[in-house]
Length: 453
Image 1 (cartoon, one colour):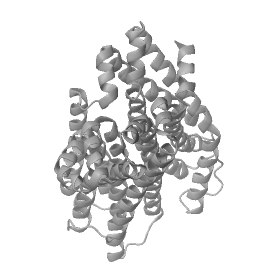
Image 2 (cartoon, one colour):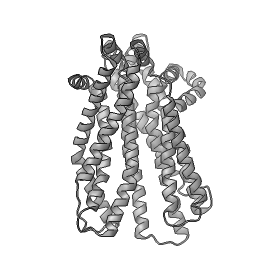
Image 3 (tube, helix red, strand yellow):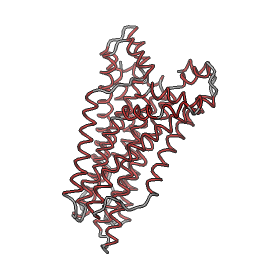
Image 4 (cartoon, helix red, strand yellow):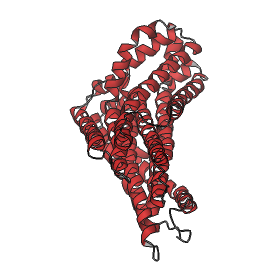
């Protein structure tokens, strides 16, 4: 099975690279913040510097761990689901469910170990640059020496490989339970249902986010220092993850509401509506990182803007602790921007490449390249709009309670420009990655595309 897994990875280079990139990005982030723990534990580091480094690694690295695990799991699950036709063929020629499961897990193990190994060198430089940013801003003493060691490597390899294998096991169990005919049907539709476990998990995350929002607006009201941030910041993260888990239902709801207007947009709009309704499962995977990107980035930006405005109005001078907290928030935003952007592009490129056979068949029955691109653009806009809509909803569980706790008003400071910037970035990423990939796919003759797909 291990040899078969290696051959399968080489044969599916596009899908393998997409999964590898997701794992590589996750391992890079985890090792970068893990290096702060190595640095904090070095001999001679002052207690105040050790506390700053440990806190930053714990807060940002902790949320990175959750986001990376979530992203790797969703990406690998998509890759396995895209191979439903291949799985059906293997079943028809005698492969057992156990053999298929071992092959999928072996592939995930190879990708996870490779991605983590490739991330070591970039993580060394990224961790050093992060420490330089902290020393330059006065949060850490300039004489603190950078170290990259056991914490960083164990965190990067452990989480990345564990998340990849766990996702492979879950996806393999689902695939193994299907018969050959059911696998072929799943290959054509991508699946539209949601498991009960997924719905329960979504409910738990939504409850945690809402609970922290209530605590922020009530218990933390009027408190100073960073206590309101400690509950308000995680609220949008939990809520975003909960909504992301419900992405198939959310996308189906939005698509149903706009089916009529899409039909009136010509052939491209009609095809976009049909595809979104039929392929909710795989296409909703692209909505998930957009929800996370919009929800967490918007929530953190306006939380920091509100805190800055309140402190300025009260004449509070920024202390070293305050600057450290502000730096942490900005690092959180930068991390989310980078990682979520990679996931949006990665997911949409993988999804679009997988549809080259579908595009070829559409052209063979009369669709023009312009109509196919119009369909893809319509889908990308709807995916972006769905992600932004529910990401905005998730951000409110941080923005409104924190504003109430700090200023007594539910209206945050910061103006509309930060939100417009987040929306613009999400939309441009979705459109650009989809259209560029689709245009390259359409360069091949239709018959060649059908054969390759």
